[in-house]
Length: 118
Image 1 (cartoon, rainbow, N blue to C red):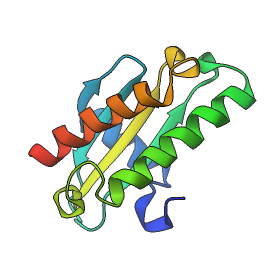
Image 2: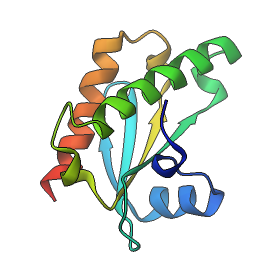
Image 3: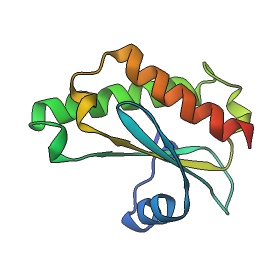
Image 4: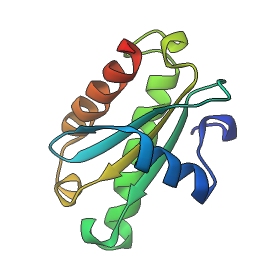
């Protein structure tokens, strides 16, 4: 599970990242990446709307995205230091409900690599 320091918790922070961040679209997710002016640890936020499915489906998708983000924070995809100071908001699209874990993994890895390349 992601520590509190790795989560975006306020609505204002979500809004800032989505409106001002760069978009990275995948088959089942859209990721918004923005540099946090305060620096610090990378932070993740998740948006899983009702269009994805019922509550059980949405929670399953959210748990999968959190697990992938936890792996990103621990440096499985890129060195953890290359993500310092970034906020990432991952929006699940309706295909995420039926996407395999590997498909979600590919989308998140693509977004993390884009953030690390900056």
